[in-house]
Length: 86
Image (cartoon, rainbow, N blue to C red; front, top):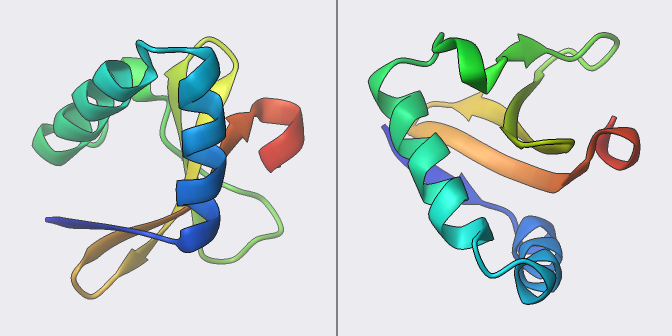
């Protein structure tokens, strides 16, 4: 499964990573886990209501990534606290 990221995600990720140096390691771990078993309980994978193609997984605490399934794999569109990305 290929992981693609939007320019918007990259900008937000860089900003968050400056505040939390462990974010890169945690995000890599969660993406790797998602690739092996997308239904792993700690990911809390779920489809967003009202947004027909968007899904969410939990990264840590209140932090979520939003993505869409695409032909090649997944396309990550957003990252941030629950209240900001939903």
